[in-house]
Amino acid sequence: MAVIAVTRERRVGETRVATVPETVKKLIASGFQVVVEAGAGAAASYPDADYQAAGATLAKTAKAALAQADILFKVRAPEAEEIAAIKPGTLVVATLNPYQEKAALEGLAKAGATAFAMEFVPRITRAQVMDVLSSQANLAGYRAVIEGAEAYGRAMPMMMTAAGTIAAAKVFVMGVGVAGLQAIATARRLGAVVTATDVRPATKEQVESLGAKFLAVEDEEFKNAQTAGGYAKEMSAEYQAKQAELVSTHIAKQDMVITTALIPGRPAPKLVSAAQVASMKPGSVLVDLAIEQGGNVEGAKLGEVAVTKNGVKILGVANLPGRIAADASALYARNLMAFASLFLDKAGAFVPDYEDEILKAALVTKAGAVVHERLRG
Image (cartoon, rainbow, N blue to C red; front, side, top):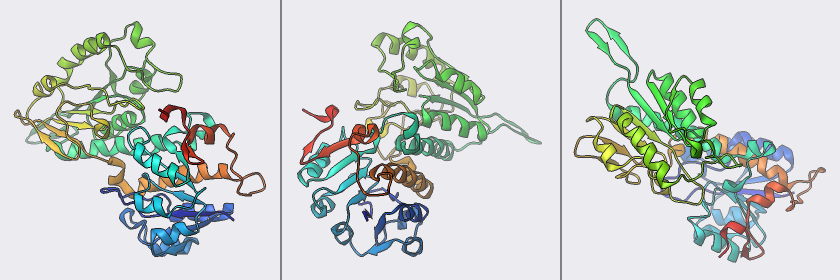
């Protein structure tokens, strides 16, 4: 019977946990044993007693948990002390941030771990339930609006009172992926007037279906600006200039701008210039969801609220899903549980099929080497 270990996240500011009591029960029912390091779920409001009640065994330390593990579930890449305790051949499943954290991959390879980066799970129908990028981005989009509303300092919906009318806040969402769509929906629920833009033509209908207005330069490049995998392509300098011209006037009229644009393996594209930020009204807010990959907004700072000379706030909040740790952990845990089902054969035996298209796509280290084609060299 394969043993899954879940250790406490050691990354500063990481409040999520890789499994929750609900998924512990289901993993055990599937034939796994689960060992949880004491305190692993505390920051996400999951006490040790709940894990024990679900059938997990508690280990006092990460080393003790890993001593018996065949599989390690993590939110972030394991830290050096965890890698040192991993047995050769242990399957590590986590969001490994493989393009930026190559040292961790090399450490896992050297330790003999077979590591899977959940970011590389392919966007195919049967893998939807394993899509950690979508599950976490959905919550990040929601939380971005909440953070922005708190920083805004004014009401979001239109209010008609005996003392007069308060106008609804104007919110502009740049980048309409999973996070952007949830940001639109949340801002609409709060009563804001919402507009949105994206380089992918398919998003126009999605934006309008949520009651927002779509804004984009709809030329030939725009019509071909989406990869087969559903990601945005990096646009040409010419297109970016035309788009910037179109949105500049629009940004100047907005109370809140939320940016969500990311390109896998590349720095986040700059969407909002310093000049555009300077054109906004005092008290306006920008929330940069791409801050951990360099940011979409010029002047955004990781982990800080930057206030410009004209009184505009730029929020560079790191790890937005971690600010809703209980729900983010629950969704992430379900993603990992679905992924772990691929390690079992039809009879329930622990026999990972490395030729399975999902496992093959997510595999990054095996037999002492970094093996993913996008990470070599």
